[in-house]
Image 1 (tube, rainbow, N blue to C red):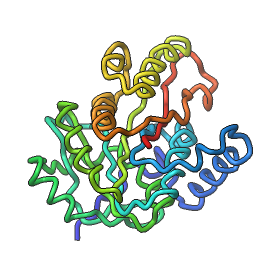
Image 2 (image 1 turned 60 degrees about the vertical axis):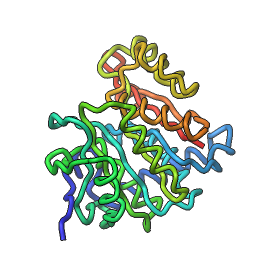
Image 3 (image 1 turned 90 degrees about the vertical axis):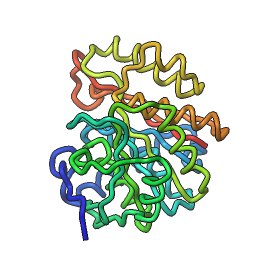
Length: 265
């Protein structure tokens, strides 16, 4: 049995499951106490967009979206993220058997993996899957939908329209939820970061692909564009959930990274 071993546990997120659980519980207490529109917590998303930085910076933003998974009937979660470590032409699909997390193993939906490999001619590049953009999502998946199967897609130089076809196909199954992983702008001062990031936010909120390509500097912009194409095709409505920058945690406004989460209903 092949296992996708954790590559960034203890770096991007705690290796101790109790520590992760405490973080999530703290974030949920904040939501339950301070969120003005509690109806957001009742949404049932078909897809979400979440960040992938270290938990101390971005997990609050991601947690809002993943908490909504509890409202769905998802039997499988497909996590899609950009490759940071290796150059990749196209998209690689993980063909391991299990995915290691601090909360235990997630079983990979091998039947769906083989179906997607054949239908969309996807390769399996093992080196591409030692990838933090997808790995940091897996503890959330296991915590909020512990019985769900997972599929992991990592893309590099990919055509958003091609990736959108994969997403549209997956969304044909009402028991499948898509997770799009991306951070926003990187290492600008807070004012410029806010300006650039709000291009991304407005593009997502309006399913506006033209706007997305007029200044959004998300590292996972290909995944966002693919999701917007698929959302338009499937008549999904975007709901912005949270936006913040690394300055909220670090207090350093000179070089920040932006984070957003959104749900598609």
